[in-house]
Image 1 (cartoon, rainbow, N blue to C red):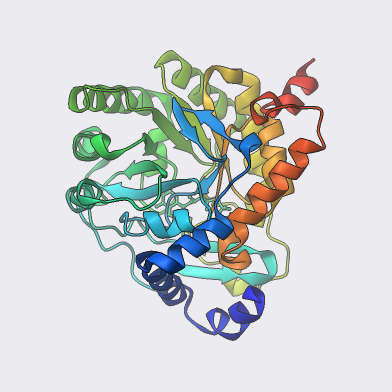
Image 2 (image 1 turned 30 degrees about the vertical axis):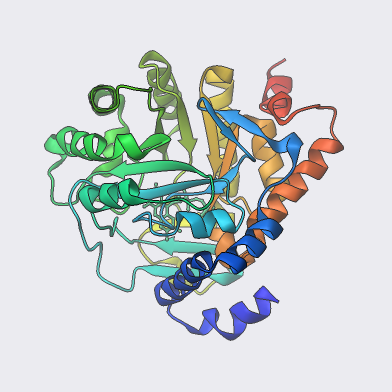
Length: 369
Ligand SMILES: Cc1cc2nc3c(=O)[nH]c(=O)nc-3n(C[C@H](O)[C@H](O)[C@H](O)COP(=O)(O)O)c2cc1C
């Protein structure tokens, strides 16, 4: 039914307009008590065996919404209602910014992919912090806060910019993510080099500890699938050295080789980050590499091209404790998260593992043995 609706309505609309329309409906539905209770009862993860402990937090299930969908933290209840158990809001930048000129979001339907060059359009850390502070949640959800660099701030001043966001947002974050992997802010991905990343992550850690004194806010870094393997290893080593809590693998890719020749060449040539099915293989590969390097010492979050429960299961076996999705939600619709959790529960039941935690990294461990 959703696919019929997608073809009839969303497919004919500009992708960004379709996003905001769907977003408005989700937010509206979440404001109507009877409706939201009904939808949440149908879609929320309710499988005991999928209960997950990660980053010192208790969750109903491992699957959450990746950053970029709810940049300004306006639809946390709405997305929780749709079955996402953790919601990563952002990317939020210290200063508000409009993002890149439109058009900046493209659907590659035949490739089950998106290309975006949104450029961190968001209301800024002050406004988002105020919204999170005033929030009166209807549903219990884990809220991750993903922060990035303000575009007009020069690369040399990036640390101060991230620190400002941390000071404003850490108190409202169940976990905090330093995003250094979006391809749409010039120079941002240079921050993934360890000589830039070390001072950045150290300063963000210190700022979080200074601002939030009654608990330790888990800190993660989100990396690009385009890093060379040795750079993935270097980030993993640095994360261990600095006592980070986890790594999110991966963001979108600037590579285009994984695109089939299905979508129009003009679309494939659009500048920006490619997500969805074409990033699946590399995201999985990066995750495996990370788990082989860090084992259970860090929490790994797998994201990139997760379309169905089988993809999610593969990420867990590769080493992810948590998993996230974005692009496939556009194509699969409101039952996406529920289908994932349901399929995961079925896979776990048919596996040799008693708990999800036992399955984490099982394939990667086997390959190493
Ligand atoms: C339109 C769009 C906007 C995004 N914005 C952000 C963002 O602001 N911050 C971020 O860390 N990732 C962002 N992402 C990347 C996603 O969080 C995710 O890492 C990536 O899309 C791969 O997952 P997917 O294949 O399930 O979409 C964005 C992705 C899309 C499609």
